[in-house]
Length: 102
Length: 219
Image (cartoon, rainbow over all chains, first blue to last red; front, side):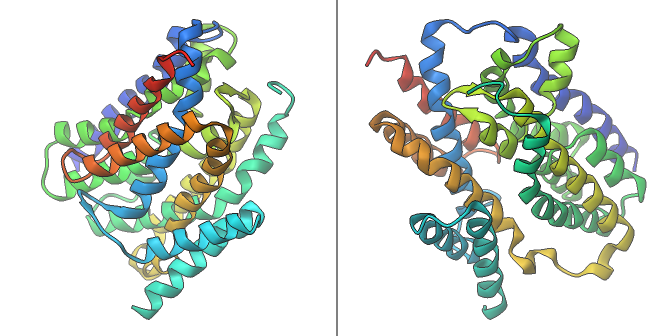
């Protein structure tokens, strides 16, 4: 249990430091012009990675499982211009259904 | 558009994530109890670490008999994406360094993505959107830790599939913005997937942000 509590304590500090770095160093200041172009593109890069890794990664292997069916449902819902709530609940429902059947 | 929204509107934007974070919090509580953790440990961890992916990463390292150092390293790598996210969010913050550091703690994936306005960030929307997720995460952990294995498998509800679906819904308008965004998305996504088998969890997401460096090139 000591290892668990030590990990929790250190992680709280390390995690807070990671999140504080940007705000402390560049907070409130306008970033130089060259940085604007990069930051505007962070969202498509990070969001794509989150979608793909959250769907197809399991630890350190790539898999196609029930989550892929959920993502497919989300793609259909977005194409049909469904509201956000329908998109995410639909993805969960399809994933749950596939898991129940397999 | 920046500054146009209120904290309350941010909370409303974050509300759809209360249920999925609650469910994932429950599974975190259940998993840690099954590993023999004290009742208070997962609850304190969720309260002060507050990062689902990092908590699961360090828990699985400890569960496999790894050292404290390995567990902290795994979690830090998983959370390294908050470095570029925090830099992007920083210009929206005002006040002294302590206050900025404190407000920076509110950055989580869903809130960051919701508050993004083409590279500029809406501070109140981000802070508001995080609150329901914090409540869900901590509340779920308490339920999972107390009820333990009596709950069964929260994965059955498919709630873990809500997050990629949500990120996709936010990604689509970004892709419609410019050809450059589509190129960056393709490059970042391919890089992340290619790295999954090769590097520890977390790194593929951070590496994907390198694709944004294409923005350094003049149009």
